[in-house]
Amino acid sequence: MQRTTARTRITFAGLAAALALGTIAAPAFAGKPTGGASSGGIKVAEVNTADGVVNQGDRVSFTFTGSYSYPAMSLTCNQGGSVVYSDSRPMYWPNPFNDPGIFTLSSLSWTSGSASCTAALKVAKRNGTTTVASLSFAVAP
Image (spheres, rainbow, N blue to C red):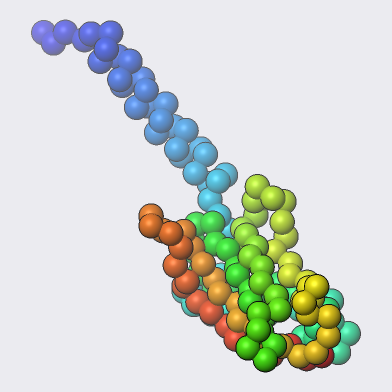
């Protein structure tokens, strides 16, 4: 006959609770991108543009394909080799900042004119972040 100690019962109870919490909490905390379920591309999703062209001052977001835990989008825009805009946004919902992932294409150093922009989809890894996809596009004045 095998003896069951209090320590064994507590260990099994703790393991059962951890497994139950993991199966309940994992879907609630899983990052959900605005894209689909394959790997790859980024597209500009214009939020408020009157002419169908991405212009300086427009508000834009991005869609992408892939399933990543807690993805973030970084956007950098340059004019004549100088960075005039740089921002990062979480691309999953809900997120701790209640951020919808919208970028406003203007800054104190970018008040007018066209720019060359690059959006980079980044995901967290053990030793930092890695870029899984990127998109370069022009912004009209």
